[in-house]
Image 1: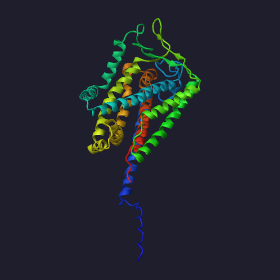
Image 2 (image 1 turned 90 degrees about the vertical axis):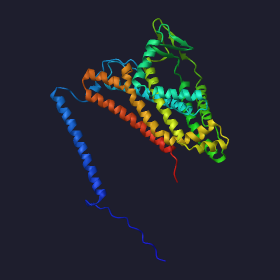
Image 3 (image 1 turned 120 degrees about the vertical axis):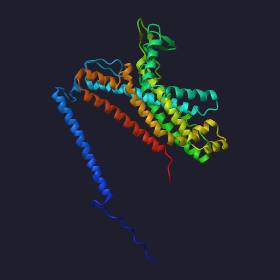
Image 4 (image 1 turned 180 degrees about the vertical axis):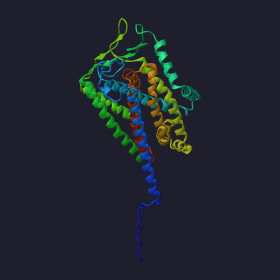
Length: 393
């Protein structure tokens, strides 16, 4: 019996008759033309700016900003440089984007799942929510929330009290803990609880695949995280001192505060984007074959277990890509916060442009901020999408 001769892969041809070679040449030509166009535009812009006596460059970033910022997570003085002012605006943008994405995911998922409720009232309310908020421009919604906080609520000298909370035109004031060693150890405990909850979920998944008996995938992990955090807090001395807000003569003093601008941006973006996420979740669940829910019912799973253990996991491969687009839209729509005076990176850049005249540089910084945040969000969501995809053999 003769041994088959192994096939020899064809050698790469570098002649013009080779389609691969022609494709490589065309790509190189395209890249060269793009580089030439960019260099031409940059040189032309620089020449015109010099002809008009307009300064260029990023050296202004080291100079004193000369303006105050009304809202910042860390101290900022007007004498500090522009780069720190941009850092404040960048952090303020992240505050809105990160918290907004979390709240949007929770609210959008609940509303999307609510569209499948057996209760007609719940289905109707979810439908009305989606159709109402997604058909009103986001800018109008931001203005609506801002006017509600600044016009409808009482003044700061006579705020609404909700237990230890104060709500007024000045924003929402709330107690904050006085930082101590126990809080540091408690934070480490929370981190350890997250790790422990991760391994518990892996164990619960393996147990479910082996025995078919479902274990708690939500309440128990949350309990583990809270237990570890509380245990760390107790081991650190269980500090309980709080910095609570008090009613001053003209305003509310002490404690923590959320400004009307921040709450308006956060609520507006969350409620608006959640309407789109709800439709994505609804479409993803509907894409799962009806036989899956029927099989789950035949196995004795409740509707809640069917949705959590059967429908949503299979719908994730359809849900994640369009939800990623909504996360990106939420982050980019935060630039509209400048309309209601929230000091995000766009607001800081506008002030810098008025003071320095470096419009090209300031706009380039804005583009870089949103490009980097969007790319990071895309990378993380693509990783999660690959992790959640059905593994083919």
